[in-house]
Image 1 (cartoon, one colour):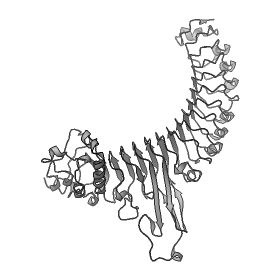
Image 2: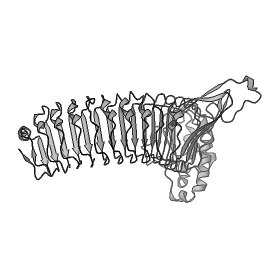
Image 3: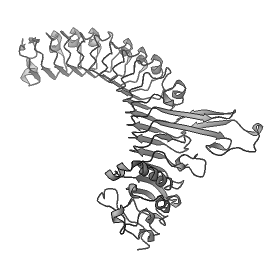
Image 4: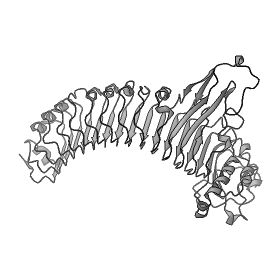
Length: 519
């Protein structure tokens, strides 16, 4: 057994409670994906985390579960992770605390900080996930510069999840290889801070240039997160700010940050007010950004008064109740934006005219923006728009005229817009429209005559338009119409003649229309 190289079982073995004593003797072991730290009740049979001590040939992935059962930080040091040079992917999971540990939270937090300090991995590590850690602060080896002997210069992915006591997260921004940073469910976290001191040899938090004259120093350029592509932050209700500060020498300056960032997502960070990328200066650095998703940011009042990156392809703004405006100039360069969603932004009163610049926009969804009173005239210039969805906007009374530019629109839905009084006559120019859905719009009494001129309209769905009196005569001549569905329109008394063909083929549906009869 001492020559055993592969011992394979994974995290699906949930019933596994501990690893037995003697594992440390398998010094040739290369594959051990899963290690469970046993609790005190199994102390005689379980060798504890120290069983990993001599297994320095381990490679690929290692999950260490139930680290809450480590009772002495020296045991964690004995695991000797820093000498496991072939390990690429490490998951450190403390597991779910019991009631006893909750009562001893302060003491447990201090212990776990020392345990994590002693679980320093080797510099070759590429992926690190820390889950359910109960410490208040991060380990020293994550605070060192990546250029020092104690950092993680090869780290590609970092995830910190469900660490409920963590209050401040100091990050060393110059991780040279980091491509994904995911922070989630950090309930106590109040701030993320990057604070670095630059020296001529690189960027360092501790080293200095003693003995080097000022005249010998060269100008220094610093790039924060030079390779980062995905930045995902979610469910941090107490997070207030993310700050980046540089203790600059006279000839040193921050040249760039997040230059390769592709996906940026902030979700359920209700108190977040300060983010470097949301400043006018910060957004200029996001030269590769393609996706921006902002959700449940209660204190977001506005976006930067500066053009968004021209590379942006998807923009979602969801449940930002304090957002009062979107700057016109923010949309100036968005020639590649294909999807724009703005939902549950109750203070937003209008969309900017800058929306006319979105010449590649294919999907526009506007919903539950209760103060929105109108749409911009620029909407008619969205020549690539395929899908337009407007819902739950009670302040919306009219739609702009001049829809001739929406030559690509195939699907148009309006729902729960109680004060919308009419549809624009320009709807007749929607030559590509295939689906039209009108639901819960009690202000509509009639539909425009141009509705009967739509050559490709195949599906017309009208529901809960309680004051609708009639349909335009032309709809019986729609060449592509294959289904007409009408529900809960009590004031509708008749349909235009010529629809018998649809009725005979079972493609005319109506219900809850007590006064409706065919002409």
